[in-house]
Image (cartoon, rainbow, N blue to C red):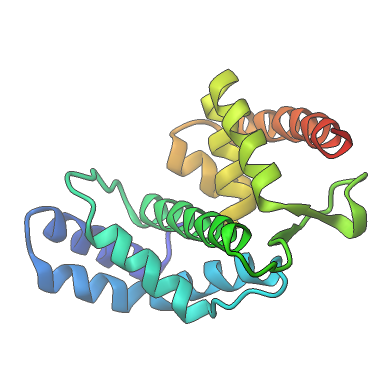
Length: 189
């Protein structure tokens, strides 16, 4: 992930951490296109969402701005945390829709997992399975989150997590197998 704006992003992250609000704003401007790509990927997998890609990015930015004492390592780390924030927003949005008195359609996520009807699973079911996986193996849950929700490659995940690409690939395979089993059991229940 050594692109031209990676170094600039790293410098802006350091300046933001030091309290420079202008650097924070320049960082979001610099990475807005990539944040929009992440949000578009997340929203593509959802049906009947009232959120736009811009809405999702803006909401994530608002949440990230409120965080204190985050040690941003680099651009990849920042984008991974942004993807995590966007995922949380979609889950919160799904839960709010499900709790409304009006009956909305459930928010679903398009997967390529065998056994899920039309390749779709509900966000809530996936979130519960990820929480269980995180309790068992946090590293594998992080790999799923970065790969599935963040749209990151194995190489990018290795950079963010500080592990080898081979370790990430093994973790991804094991986590997918565990999730397939957990989701199959949850959908039968």
